[in-house]
Length: 256
Image (cartoon, rainbow, N blue to C red; front, side, top):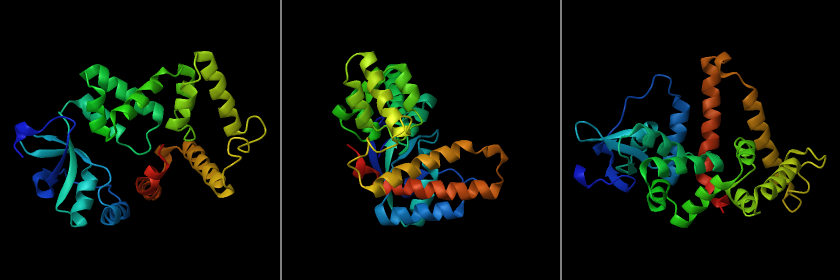
């Protein structure tokens, strides 16, 4: 495609050979790269690569370099890409919003920032993250939650998009906080009843999964990454990549 025909935020199907990758870093984990390749063979490239035009007018990768190499190893001839105007703030925010594990509040705040800084419409934002305009409006509405709620749920994986929407619809700020912190206390077991009331209709196996997810987050927060050696970091990288690939394969099944 001719350079002038690329539109910011739009998706394109491009030949692998027409995209210029960066050199892979020396600390790349070969096991993680092999797992990514196998995932692409099985399910295709689930997360588009972000590209822009370089000084030579060729498409260069802004985010997704490892995915390009994994796709090459998987024998792909073309890739889904999202074209991004090369502006540092836009690139950083757009790449972050495509993360599978980004908390709902963080996504809402970053989308609002893009909208204010660059005058994007909800349609523009929808193209960037692959969602409809009504869904974008719902995500942006989470910015209406109180600051106390935003801070409390940033690192709590249990508070999903749909749960926060229900809290937002409680009405005034005090009603929102009352509902939120009552639910938070039940989830964390601060009321002495643990997860029983919140998940009373949920299968026990699902309750164990939820508990284990919380344990992973808690144990990871206890780590001092600066004290870990290269081998430990590599093993962590493999573990988290497995989790990421699982989310990519199954996450959409739980979205509401």
